Image (cartoon, rainbow, N blue to C red; front, side, top):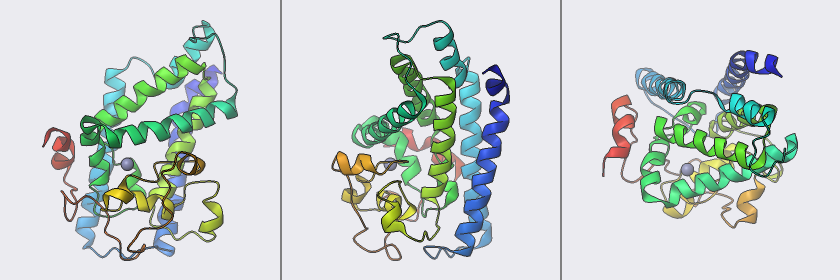
Length: 260
Ligand SMILES: [Zn+2]
């Protein structure tokens, strides 16, 4: 088990770069929507999304003394979970996924949290790099919620690592601009790019739908499922009405939660 923790950064990086590469090739070869912009502007947007991820990683390293997996290991080794239970891997992953669904929904409903989460929604378009465009404070709060879940359900380090790799991979998949064959069948099981794109529409009703990241079932169970965008995938406007044309400057993204 300690090997797992020791190799965690390499395992994560390998999974991240592998899925990133696959989704970049996929969305270039089979794009779902047209996105015409000068290459310089595209590169700036991608660079700033990458910088947001780097800043979030640094913040987690500086603000928290250990990773979620190390915390899970500590809880398990010392029998410290709240009810003295240890949840098995598959159930743990499903529980975390349901929790993330509700976390996302709450970030839409509580005005202070929405100020953080709208950074993600103010993107002018959607592609694989939208998956890493989150405000560092939102990433930090998500980590605290994960710590709480580990303590409540006695989640193992493997559960946490498997879930985080799935979540990162699925976020890159469902934010990508890839055309996915068999979408209508696949989305009975998992959240597809077409399903998640509805969530990034400028229409409030559509923004407040399809909160799931991995399993598509939660939106169907909890009544937040919208099948298709009103204006169609090719013609729909992505983003927020407050940020017409989107916001992609690093300073603008970092300061956005502190603006009215
Ligand atoms: Zn959202």
